[in-house]
Image (cartoon, rainbow, N blue to C red; front, side, top):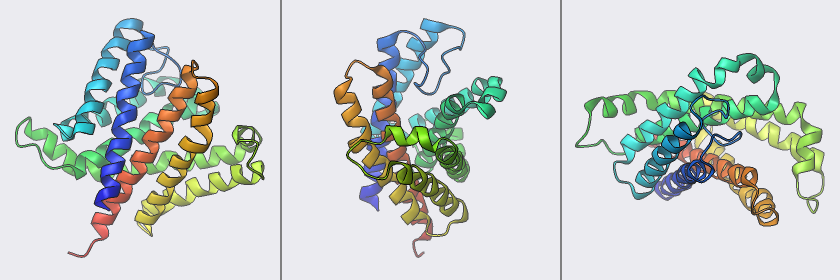
Length: 258
C-alpha cells in the first residue's frame, strides 16, 4: 500500500504542475483548466500567478519537499475557487452539466490534496497551523473527494448517449460502459463514505481513471496534439487516478491493525 500511496502522490503532483505550465503557456484563464473559472476578473495576472503557484506546488509534492505545505495549499486554493468563484454561478452549476463538472472537479481534487496532506509527515519547520490543519482536515477531504463522484456517476446516467460517443470505436457496448462507469462512480463513493471495502473501492476507482488515461485520453491527445482541452482532460483524469490511490492509502492505514 505504501507503493500505491507513493504512486498516487506522483500521479497527483504531475498534473498539478502541468496545470501550472498550461496557465503560463496560455497567459489567460481557460475553461476546463482547473481550478480557476475562465470568467474570473484579472485575466493574465491571475493566470500567471496561478501558473507559478501550481507549478511550484506540484514540483514540491513530487519531490516530497515541503510536500505537506504544498498539498495543504492546493487543497485550500482549489476549495477557495469552488466556494467563492464557481458557486457564484450556482444556478449554472446545478443545471448545466459542463459547468457542474468544472466546479466539481476542483472540489474533488481539493479533497484529495487534503487527504494527501494528512498522510504526509509533519513539517518540522513552518507554520504550526499547517500541521494542525492537515491532521484535522484529512477526514473532511475524504468527503470532498467522494461526494463529487456521486454527481459524476449520476451524470453518466443522464448523459449516457453523449458519454457513449466518447468511448473508442473498437470497444463494444458503448452505452453499457457509460452506465457501468456511472454505477462504478457511485459504488466507489458509497464505499469511501461508509468505510465498507473502501481501500479496494478507491484502488479500483484509481485503476479505472488510469485506464481512461491510457485507452481514452492518450489516443485523443495523439490525434490532436495541439488541442489544449484534450491535454487538460488527460491530466485531470491522471490527477483523479492519483487522488484515488491517495484515498486508498489513507483508508488502508485506518483499517490496519494497531
